[in-house]
Image 1 (spheres, rainbow, N blue to C red):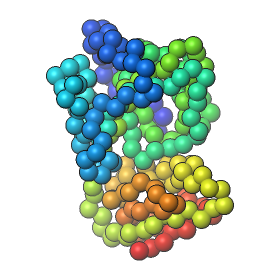
Image 2: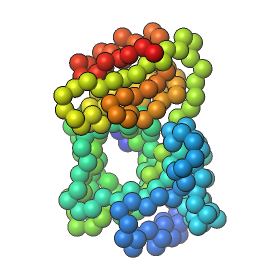
Image 3: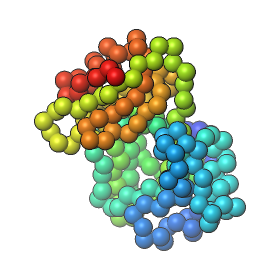
Length: 227
C-alpha cells in the first residue's frame, strides 16, 4: 500500500485562497479546528469549533465524506523534521503552503514532494514515515484524521502491550514496532477498544488468533500481557 494516495478530490481555487487567507498568517505552531475534549480521541466524531462552522473549513471537511476524529492545521517550520514513526489512524492531507518539503517513505526509501496543488491526499500512516521541510517557508497542511471503528471480534482477547526496554523513550518504540501492526490490524477489523500508550502500557482488544503475530511484530522490547 502506498504511503500517499490521490483521493481525486480537488479543492476549488476560490476555497484554496480562502483557506490560505484564513491560516497562512496565523503565528501558531499548530492550529486546532475541532473540539478534542469529548470521548475517546480515536473513535469519536469530531465537532468543528463554532468559528469554523459555516466556513470554507466546514465545506472542506464535508467534501471528505468520512467520520473524522480530529481536524487541525499542521505546521512545520523551515529546517524541521519528525522522528520516524507510524500511526494507528490514517489522515487526509491538503497542503496550503510548502517550499522544498517532503514526506519520507521508509519502506521504499523514497522522498515524496509535498506540493501545493489543491489535491487531497490520503496518507497510510501505518507505513513508517517522516516529513522534512528543507525550504524557507513554513509548511502548512490541513490534517483530517479518520476515526477508528469499533468492531465485533469473534474471539476477543484483551492485552496490555507493555514496553520493557531500557531506553526511556517508549513512544519511539511503540511508533516503530507496534503502530504499523495495529494500523493494518485495524484495517482488517482485527482489533477494538484501542487506548493510547501511557506509562509504558498500551491496552487494546485483539482477535485471539492474532496474538503470536502481535508478539512477533512487537519484538523483544515488549511483553504482551493477556488480561
